[in-house]
Length: 433
Ligand SMILES: [Zn+2]
Image (cartoon, rainbow, N blue to C red):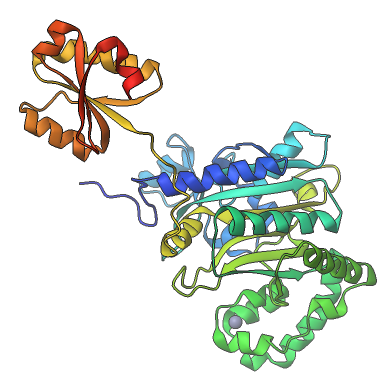
């Protein structure tokens, strides 16, 4: 037996998953977004340049894609440990935002704001645990080319409305922070570095490393002792310029006017390099839900991502990614499964003998021509086993065809819920369902 790869999952019942996706698409389309799709394989450079070399995603978690006929592959298989540099380094996408921005720049789109969403798998080689997979699924939502902080407020209100009004999700919170402009961050990193140097003996090894590479990332540390220390760290909000301070206040005011509840979390910086200004996370505060992986939607502003992937100028943008597995886990934990797609009533056609099977196929074809959900039982012998099978299939109607029915051009329709039976002309079947 061949087992699935560690950290992946087989979706054998997609009704909840598809329910979330279809409701989300409907919701975002109402906010004037449209759907796009980009390849699963991308140039490695795309993520090196956009996410940053110091991020775990790029330094440890990327899946590289190497074609079988690549010279470096054959060298390795023949036992030569020397690895040649491949002509084009490819990888499986670890997220969707950078790909969407690349597509925007490649297509030379001029009409902005470009409001799009995309849904599909992404890949990261992380330690698998509840709510964290190596192939996971995201819906990524982006507004490319809009500078106003009020766009951020509307964007957050759109998600809040999706979670509370559409999914009826309970026990979640919106955490927001403001990480300023590049200049604000440069200024803040000096202040932060002083604080970290003063407390260096209390830092874990990872934080000591990050202090010198990208100091703001220390806030992502999982160590309790580090997190205790950072409660007293200076915040960027204290040091940022007047213009940033004004926008930050504007964002909070607008959220209040739109009745969107939020909490400010000064240590929220998000793991990726490209964020600036507004950053946010929707987290589950229901301890039953997701355990350690409690963020089910996160994002922020990325005003310089376009130039990082090769655009001639900056396109101020805001985006977010929703973790589909995590949303599904949360909805299932809350028993809120009204989201799942409702399957149409099933008609099962039962030919009693092999002589009636061709007629039964014609009846099934007629049902499908009228867009009924229909199936047929061909591999059972006794009438009892056929009815049992129809019941197991969840049939609402059974359409029985025996020698009598065949001779008289009729069919016996059985309502599988009430048990009532009626004999009707074959041409009248549709109107009796
Ligand atoms: Zn630490």
